[in-house]
Image 1: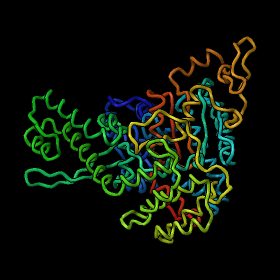
Image 2 (image 1 turned 135 degrees about the vertical axis):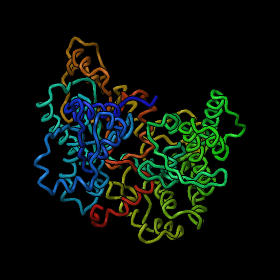
Image 3 (image 1 turned 135 degrees about the horizontal axis):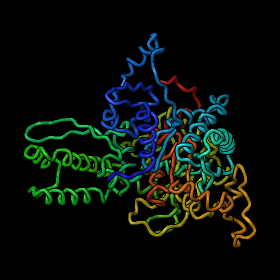
Image 4 (image 1 turned 120 degrees about the vertical axis):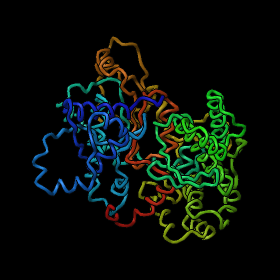
Length: 533
């Protein structure tokens, strides 16, 4: 089964509060959606679910015509629900606001920064209202925007709670951290399937397009990579080295259960089986999709990506695969920078990882690296623009690389780095976050003196927030909500599932990042934001 979680919760809210509340026997309704609403509904409701409720969708062209006409006066029912976020996955959400990155970090957006942060706060507050929680809001000390967003969020939560008494004060924490907290993770080539596919392949709107061939035919197919695909849920966080083997095993098990004869588990043979056994088209098509996806990722990996991964992991960790300190980083990175087959953005990723490892380099040395790499002038703007995220690349500018917890030796040498956000989530679940580094916007109530002694440094803040009654009121609510200001990498969203399978943790951001989209966004920070398409 596809995992229950945030998507299911919002889907039920839409069906119950918007559609079923106005449903009458024997009547069909027209559902009128603007673009933001369409993204929210599409993320958590199947079209078949909506049609089953006696509803037909109003196309955008008709919606615009209705808005211009007198018919708008005749629309009988307007149902408003506080959902201004997109449930991307069962434990992941976005605020559907990629342009907020420019508003938060570009000097051209300085005049709108408070407004942008206020909009994000409003959308975050609707997430809390949907979950029925009034969380303790904390933020990472340092960047001013973290504190501003946290204060704005608290104000909106207070306003919502006045109208929504069901928002219970319990053990939930909402943590706010900015993108500069970890600049390493969005630069790395990640080798788990979901992140790797979005990094290396042309996947748009989570849709993978590929060609199949069989019996002389070549057909283009499109597959949506979402949680309605149970096979995708099993595979998305697996290392690419394990994916093909796992798909093959699952396919053979399926074929044996249906008494299908297949000696080779490959896309071509699946095409033949589909011709003969059309009743199994849905299941076999999914296996074909994921075999194709894994194969496409491996083909890219076996080009320049494998060499890049080795260099990137050494620079990110500061140690090589044997655990020895990298004494001469230039020695491992120069061959990549000089290779004309390596994409300029990939060379930038290597240069930035080197600068983060060294905690800054001189402008002269940086210019030499760029010259060796032959990076085009437009893309060179990424380097100075990174200072706008609070990370100047010159020496003595502070620690640029995040401290991450030492973990047991990774199974794969090219996947040794662990996102810094994973440490934060683990500490939050164990009440180990330092209150000096992660202050509360509003200090929690002091635990009663009758309670057992607690840690003098970290405390157990949640014990003074309504006691057992409050805990019962939010049974099933997530323990930790983490919001990453400035975009979240798919390697980071994976951490929500790794530290807490089953949704005690939700992780979200303004939008989902790929390494390319992150670098392009940084590149554009010294320019005005183009009009929205």
